[in-house]
Image 1 (cartoon, rainbow, N blue to C red):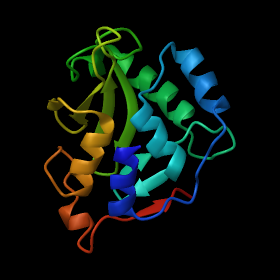
Image 2: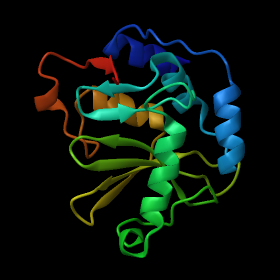
Image 3: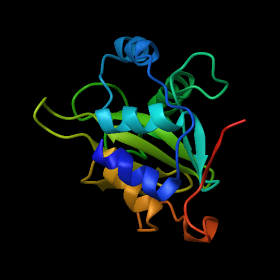
Length: 173
């Protein structure tokens, strides 16, 4: 919850505030993983949004036009294609060490959560630059990575020019 309060301080008050775990349970059962709590808390608070007009976060609620489940299924299929798999440090999927797609950016990046090797290991963030074979592993949780992004630190996505007045968000149409 500490990460969410820091995100709230930078982004402003969320207005989605989802509390029903059913969409998460269904998606997690389908994928065979449990998303990290910081990711779930942030997405439950804000919903499907655009951050700084650049980073797209999506919620798994089925009634939303921009659904996390639809995005994950589509991106898993895309990144499993032979000519795309070479651009990532590990296969996509829900197994230990595999990459689960969770966000995209208008500037061409794809954001993945690296599934921990075991229950005691933390989730990590991998960002792939879609227009090149470059990728970066961030030894931090999703919440820490998002906070660095919101603070304008280099986490592959460059938001300074997209958020000259500070971080902002809006619901996806």
